[in-house]
Length: 348
Ligand code: 13P
Ligand code: SF4
Image (cartoon, rainbow, N blue to C red; front, top):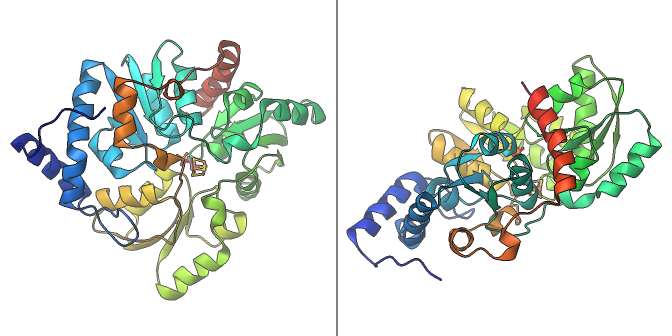
């Protein structure tokens, strides 16, 4: 069902101009920027979604990796996984629409069991969250009795329920430092686990990290040669990476941090040119919000995040499909909530 908005009305033109003002400097593909025509096509949806979300007392949270028409056209809050978890926790809306991947919407539902939580993309996966089950975590814990278990937020509710504390890329190092003992189980990002062990050693608080799981299909594609090529082609460039990248890549970068961390690094830097070893959505946000800086982005698109669109956001708000309605088994949710609450407690 398409939104009922007349074509070529002044309202539509005005909305297209509003969107173009936000998106005009943003890349749509590697070679093209968003055009006024793109914004005209998006405008019927953004107008309808923004009207319906008010009628339904809904709030839209969009991860920075979703497309800019969502991030700037309809989202009430945009950010990384920790920022959005905080917004979900603080929200007084009746309905939360989470434009992101399944584990993020699931986390919002666990934090807000009484609210309706919708995800436009349906069961959008994540190679990290899908790499491990709760039973595998239990088996790992049985092999290492007494060792605390920490999970990355990119994990299923079952994995969270089987751990003691959850972390995001923004607080993983600080929370790990606060965990007792000199051993720590960390799942399900094997590369972040190595980065964590290295960072704890660098901070003078070493721990043996016992890791299992997989890697992010976007960040695990970067190789040391990508950094070398950026430096050779653009002398003086600052190269930044997400801690889901391989340690041999991170070691060569000027800054390694979460989506929010990278944004702050670019904002506070006096440099002008940045090589971005991360997902395209963050590059788009920087283009929109820091237009006086230049970004070189070799590649990296999360196809799971890009499953969210204006069309399925409109559908989720009006007539959600079963897979767009987030439900979590109550016993698992209650256990996982303790793990997430522990993160909020330790992240301060
Ligand atoms: P952030 O915590 O930086 O939002 O990362 C989430 C994610 O999925 C990165 O790939
Ligand atoms: Fe998962 Fe990687 Fe996509 Fe982030 S970018 S949601 S870690 S697959």
